[in-house]
Image 1 (cartoon, one colour):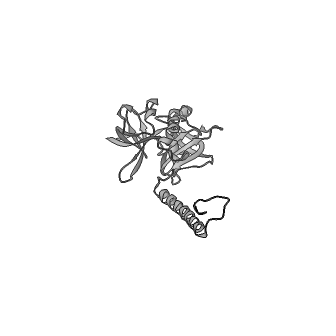
Image 2 (image 1 turned 90 degrees about the horizontal axis):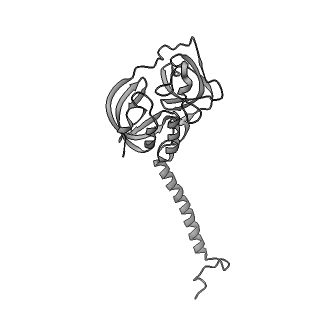
Image 3 (image 1 turned 90 degrees about the vertical axis):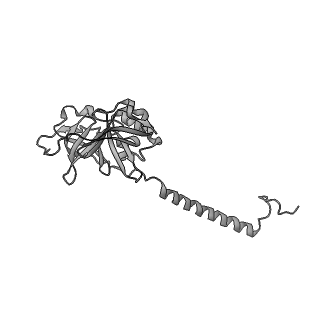
Length: 249
């Protein structure tokens, strides 16, 4: 038996040719792993593009507690805009609006925004809502809901706050527990749809014109088919449905 048949750590160094081979193989493996990682990352789903700005500021407009806590205010260009309202945690604030509903108000909070969708996370440690007599609210009244058509869609149910930018990626099985807690607490549920042409839409979910109850929770984050009435509410799209119309796919 020759001394080259086995490698012993404390024995003589391996031939130079072997060392060069393992050095080259290691460098090639490192480069290949980096290239594979770059390739896979290019095809992964984009992370949540929403943001949550920590700055506390004021918005003026009109609020409603139903079907969920919402506010009509003005965008930077003066265009009327509907925004959701929520607390800093996993809860809605419908019960706190009370007598302020339908009256000119000031709301203080931080902005969560994703594209045209937005929510104000009200400042819990201060008096975040108050009447604002004299505020110009022309054009800010909540519009009449316009029925569009009966429709059947496929997608997933998620909580609007996290999807707007509070968390990432904010949908899918990994987010099921968080989304269920948010919706149970009063955060508006929404239906996320993506067709074969990658066209995406987010529809606020209602039931007989009101908020959904806890019977919606078992379907959150699961791929489902939904049948309901597509509606337009100003700058918002809604789908009004009964939980009995949901079907897992």
